[in-house]
Length: 145
Image 1 (cartoon, one colour):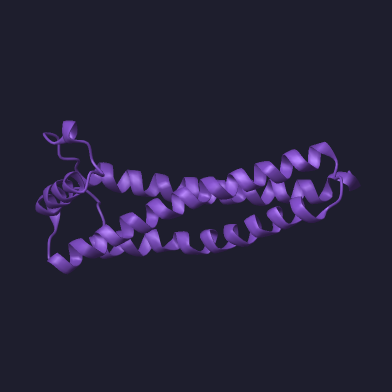
Image 2 (image 1 turned 135 degrees about the vertical axis):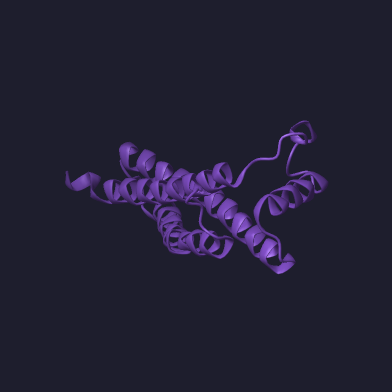
């Protein structure tokens, strides 16, 4: 028997991406403001600010993916589906909307792989937010170093 959590627990964990998404949005605004307001910053600071902006954009992608996954899990709960029937229904819906390629139609992804992918997305989102914060702090402290 696998130690796979229930759909509501998966959804609850995916909601943990909200805090880094909010923090990242604030950091992105700060980096963009600094890029526009600071007259002639050091080239290294500019590169670090741009790296912070890039980290914010990457984090935004992961936040979007996590929200999509959380919404899909909520949809499965609303439909009253679980287990492999939920996986098949989810694959069918993703193919119908074009979010899953038709070539992958024969293979239904199991919940273990889906769950591992969701956790990987959450980890990558947190890492992108940490990178964004670190590069912004380095950019702010660069003239002082």
